[in-house]
Image 1 (cartoon, one colour):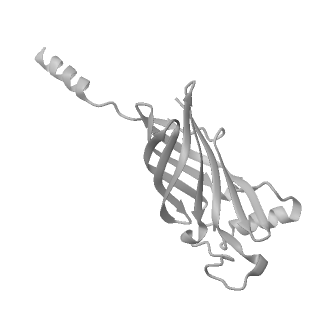
Image 2 (cartoon, one colour):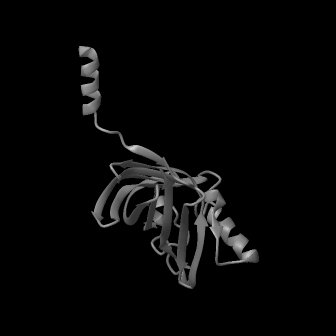
Image 3 (cartoon, helix red, strand yellow):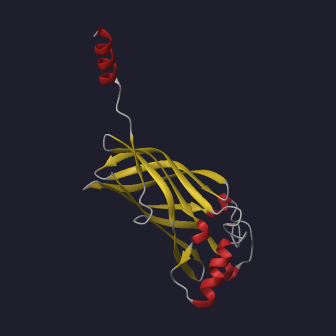
Length: 190
């Protein structure tokens, strides 16, 4: 009897473990915007897998992987659409034959106010990992956790130097901005 009571006391004193939620890849999205002197291009990269750790209703950690080989473009059609996607997938940009996926690992999520969080973690593109920090809004309704936010990164930090003003002079209207902007929605069901 003493053993049973001891076991019950130990179980009662053990802290609850974080719940790991699977990201719904069909309901989640990552949109990208890349700009140059003469305009910008937009598209999506599909989410292939992900998980979000939640403890007592608060996000603790997360990991999301996207498939760069299935990147899409939304603003061009026909020949230019195909040319842009092939170029983005080439070694000049994301080298998807060698690095088909990119991922982000969130190591810390700090609640700021209301539904806003400050996320910090590591973004890996082309096998290069760099720290990132960004804000996002978190809602938890009817058993569905949703995270919406924006993240920008400097493509040159990941070895993507094609037509960058940091590395090439006199590009004129061929200059491509180094900053890539991402807008994302991650959905996980409890």
